[in-house]
Amino acid sequence: VYILGIETSCDETSAAVVKNGRKILSNVIASQVDWHQKFGGVVPEIASRKHVELINPVIKEAIEKAGIEWSDLDGVAVTYGPGLVGGLLVGISAAKAIAMALDIPLIPVNHLAGHIYANFLTGEKIEPPVVCLTVSGGHTDLLYFNDLSSYQILGRTRDDAAGEAFDKIARVLKLGYPGGPRIEKIAREGNEFAVDLPRPLADQDDYDFSFSGLKTAVLNYINQLKQKNQEVPIADLAASFQRAVIDILITKILKAVEEKRVKNVILSGGVAANGRFRELLKEKLNSMGVGLYYPPPILCTDNGAMIASVGYFLLKKGEVCGMDLNAVPNLRL
Ligand code: ATP
Ligand code: MG
Ligand code: FE
Image (cartoon, rainbow, N blue to C red; front, side, top):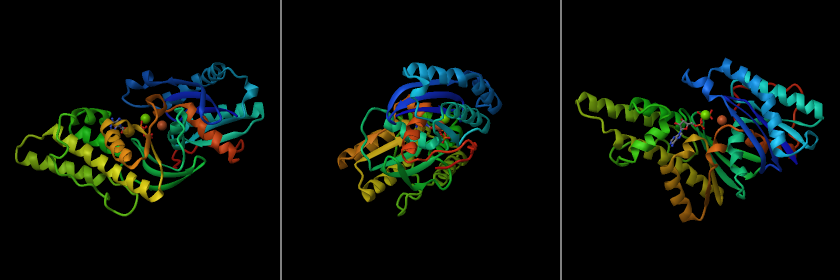
């Protein structure tokens, strides 16, 4: 089964062909970063225009690189949210045109599901059931997969996302953007237990997360030192903050692993790139005989292959849609 996946939710125009949900035949990604960089962030109007320019050549290249004919396609999967409405509509229109012209199913895909399914594209055979933690700038969700075609949401953050907390603390410590990598770097020179910080909700009997209290504790600590005219120990504070976030994440993952009796854990989203997090989590899971997987960097960021992968599993379940598909900018899992 060959699925064409189309992704235009933010600032990458991407199209890919994936075989049977797992094998990437092509994954063409046109990044618009050069056009947005000078504005310090993604400009929605520029993104929409660039998607319009790039979408046809990118799709054509994806078909050519896959070495298949248009008529080989069994379905077209497209991101319909969450994301920027202008960009989403460009991808959806292209997908509709192809589905109609080839008379094949149109498959609506949630972008966040795409990030999770990126784990299944690495060539490793990850056997369900699995517990999955999605930790990005906008999301902190803990999920349980009984099989690869459906998932259950165990818990999510009640306030800030973990990545958002990293970014905010980095700003306060004047470390720059994006915060996660900057904090990780300076934390290597600090002592993780130098500053006593809370681990909100960590010992609570559910799968919810909360990071705003931790952020406030860091701010209070800084203010107290400033009032006493004392220097802020940046490396120690960064290390202690990072460790607090990691402890919270790991506690909830281990709780889910035990209660759901899974043999594998998968990660997705930018915070999953944190080396200290991976290291500590791996240590714990190894001692329990549980596997840990995370996608390579190219599949962590936005791409069409992950959309095609989700599309395959949705098609198997018959979850296709009609030509009235619309963009849903604030779609959730
Ligand atoms: P979403 O996908 O939820 O809409 P996003 O696109 O901002 O949000 P990602 O691109 O997956 O999310 O991840 C970016 C986030 O990951 C940022 O908050 C960044 O600080 C964080 N991050 C990146 N690298 C690291 C790291 N090494 N340690 C901790 N956090 C990191
Ligand atoms: Mg991003
Ligand atoms: Fe994304």
